Length: 115
Image (cartoon, rainbow, N blue to C red; front, side):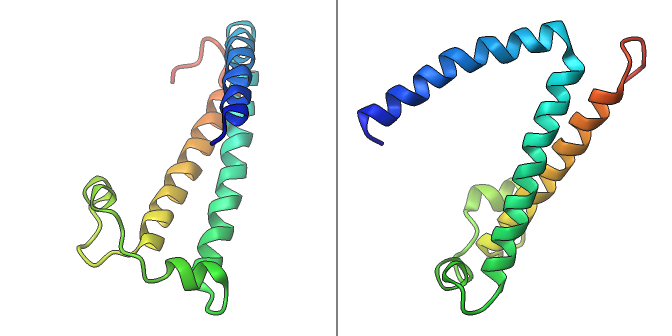
């Protein structure tokens, strides 16, 4: 990444981190809802990428369908030795869906509710 891109990322982090932390302290449910929607967007993205990797004739299928899963992913998700990168994507997709559901659940909890 160029220096301009790096600078923009650092400025965005410097502005957004305190802002989002303040929102969390003032109204945690809003922050959980926001993160839940971010995770939901990630779920849609993963679903789209997985569909394209599995669809013959697409650039993602040509580029990724035959790529092996990284060893760290095989160890983390206990994937078989012959796992492909799309299997890793499916595990990441499942994780994001779980995070989405957890954050939407936390957004619904009242302060005194057990979690």
